[in-house]
Length: 269
Image 1 (tube, rainbow, N blue to C red):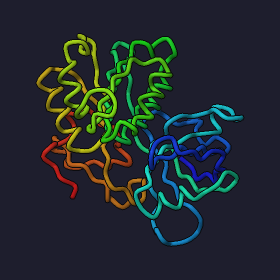
Image 2 (image 1 turned 30 degrees about the vertical axis):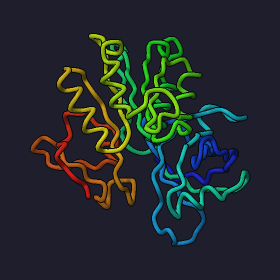
Image 3 (image 1 turned 180 degrees about the vertical axis):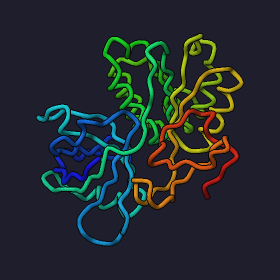
Image 4 (image 1 turned 90 degrees about the vertical axis):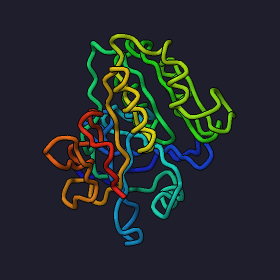
């Protein structure tokens, strides 16, 4: 983990309100594992005062080596992301990372990726990290509110995964939620060696975890929770565990957890 003063070499809107940003710095992604994240701060102003967490989407690319460039995908939802969206190639952003615990892939398992909304970005990093010959075994389900918000799904398909999509407006693919799609196609998706990797809104994750538990399918989740420091000091991202251990910090012991580690009745407010 280190602080990088990263050069923006790409800023492109890839779907309505969502932008792809490329960041270049020596060694910025050299130690990055899929599912980890970076804390980004723009400039020296104190509004917003705190940096914001962003999962990395892809590493390498552009004119840089694999360890010197990383891409993130973000939705413009507040002051911090609005400032990121106003940046231009050639400007610099402060990036702390990579941080946290990411996805743990067992080569003996077949990944079933389930992403909701912007959570699908973290799953793209896992797909990129897999050996090329393994990607064709991967099945991915991606859901969004609008059919125009499925850029990650198309990227996964381009990378070799077998992808199904769901949109709540019926604009593309299954008309409904990604959970509804999972339930409808479970007979075609589940194998004896399937493992689910899920990222998205908390309510979606809870439902997927409950469904996976009933089916006896192992499941990992990446939780979305507010973070202030990103390094485990402030305790603002505490996640209640199902064991006597009490709580874990999403920025240190997570954001990826095994589904059974979390108390799904927990509410982080």
